[in-house]
Image 1 (spheres, helix red, strand yellow):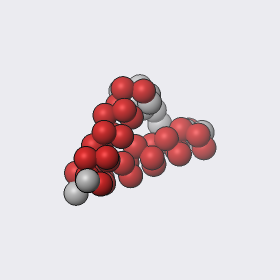
Image 2 (tube, rainbow, N blue to C red):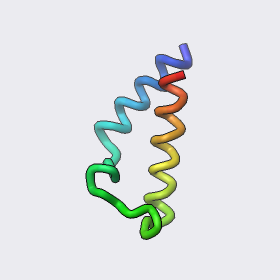
Image 3 (cartoon, rainbow, N blue to C red):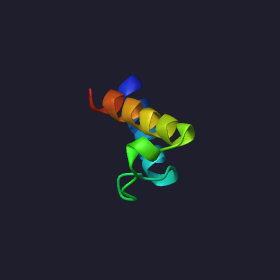
Image 4 (cartoon, rainbow, N blue to C red):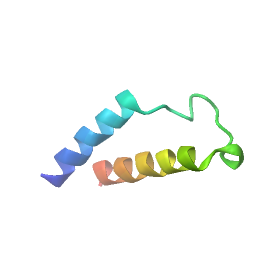
Length: 50
């Protein structure tokens, strides 16, 4: 059940949130909000794949 929820959230993240890897964002120049979004997407992706 949880895995399905994480997969759904991952699909929503992909559709709604910006992809910083496609924008070639330099992590050393990223703002705190950008770093928080990167961390959130990483956390959800990791949980969806486990």
